[in-house]
Amino acid sequence: MSNAKSIKRSMKKCINEIASTSELYCKNPKADFTRNRKLTFSDTMKAILCFSGKSLNKEMIEIFGCSGDIASVSAFVQQRSKIKVTAFDELFHKFTDNHVKTNLYKGYRLLAVDGSDISTPDFDNCTNDNLTNLYHLNALYDLCSNAYTDALVQGRLERNEHKALIQMAKRNLYSVPTIFIADRGYESLNNMAHIQELGQYFIIRLKDINSNGIAKGFNLSNYGVSFDVPFNLNLTRKQTNAVKGLCEMNNFKFVPHTSTFDFLPKTSKKSDPLVFFNLKFRLVRFEVSEGKYELLATNLDVSQFPIEKLKELYAMRWGIETSFRHLKYSLALNNFHSKKSEGILQEIFAKLTMYNFTQMIISHIIISNAKRKHLYKINFSVAVHTCRNLLLGSYSPNNIEAVIKRHILPVRLDFHKPRNPIPKACVSFSYRLA
Image 1 (tube, rainbow, N blue to C red):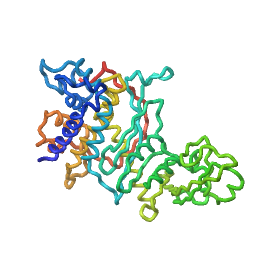
Image 2: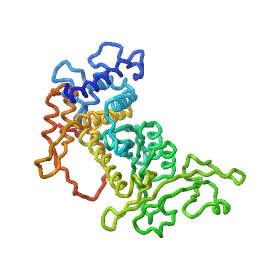
Image 3: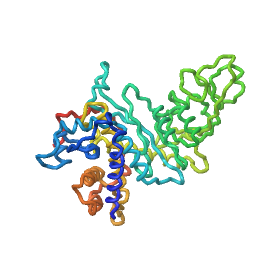
Image 4: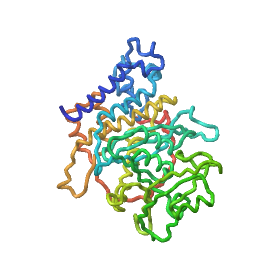
């Protein structure tokens, strides 16, 4: 059996297992999907998995075939509205946990954490002061396996990347040591403390020493422009002269009551006992280009992970940024087929599942670079199109890997371009792909 055929069979098995207990995932278990319809529970789920960026009419024709007997768009909308979002969440985790291979880096699992705003036509998530409808996708991304391992979607008003990281870290307790890699948006002593208490490791980029961040509270003037300094930090809510005298410079930090720190009392009266929390980490600053530096906080061992290794690991974090681009454009996550919150969340988890499905298939494809001038990689957009048609049954799994292997792109290692983020609106229903 070919690899593509095996993976397709695994996906169908996961869908059928959820469909066999559809009463757990329907809004009205006693009535939903109990009658014979053209669109079954599994058909509806598979259709949402295979959505591209076209209008719903064109999607129906492409998915169910060009026939006068296919279900109407209205019938499809009614069927999908019966399915809870938990069905797609369960499919994502079931397929990922059972079928995505875990690759390790020197015995560690590398998980990048990041978030991305998603523009939607959801008017339920809209406020009067800002008519931009946004959801925030928080994700854990395995950098060695190139697959999403967990995701948490928040509304614009509930957006909190720190809480999302802690929640995902707690529900993903792996049997192997795990390194969580994050950018400056996750700079927080509370995040570092939670990961330390879980017995895991972190690499978090901090604001530089001259900025208003964690590092500003330490005396680092004696270490030069590049350094690797260990800290054995005692955190407390009290700020009395007696407490300050207990600790040496750089070994004490006062945490104000306005700052979130879950391992210390929220209030601290004079009569309350003195409570410390010990946090061990390294501050590592290195030059990335002429005159430009990055500052990282990590609790990894210095002998196993010196500065050069940390620099390499943090550079790998860019993989999650690339995956967000593939989600939004190659998998058409910006092109939703519903205005309702539940329909949008269905499609978000469906796209995450299809991303992992595609990555599993292309991960077994080896590109020979022996006689080529440059390194090459798979064209992910072509791979997504091919894998979508594989799941629909339009393409044979026997030749799927050979077709994907023919469509490759050069890897531009030395290409650098300044980032210029521009907010992008959701693609309107009236302007879809032909």
